[in-house]
Image 1 (cartoon, rainbow, N blue to C red):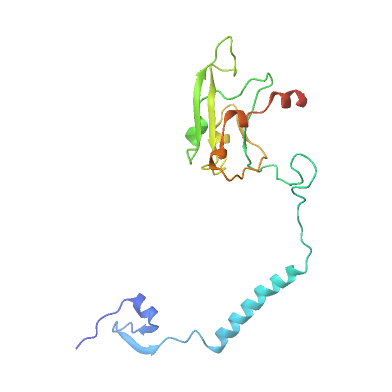
Image 2: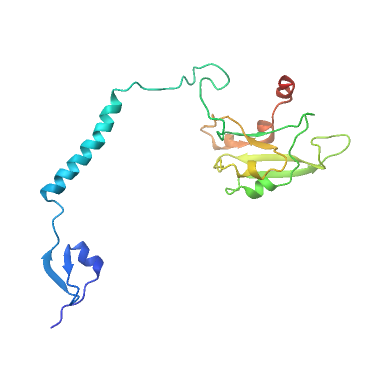
Length: 192
């Protein structure tokens, strides 16, 4: 009577070797993984890892003086490339740079940008183009801060600022509107 064939996966799980000539199970077991040398190697690996941990225990802790520090970031140190809360920019005349081209909303992988366009008139000039963003919302519940919207904008109207305090207990507070993100006119006059 022939023995049934066993797949390699089952043979490895049962730690049995397969005879390559016959394709049948060999009654000899694989070498044990709990041998003395294996235990010694495991202990040596744990000791090496714990030596790094114990070496760091006695080093002084380096912390930033946040939120009790000086300046507008209150002691936080941010890199220049940091992607924080979005900022809608103005041009040198104080007009909005956003021309409602919808490229940022199209580039957004999480679909968190909502724009509603309106036409500029001679009496009411909001941007230097024909259109402006009447509504510009970003839902930070969905935003992944990838920066695709910043790269897609042809007028550099949207940028990442250094704002990082976005945490809230109410999810509706994470929908930022145009008024929340737009650079104030007073910031333009102090920059000149």
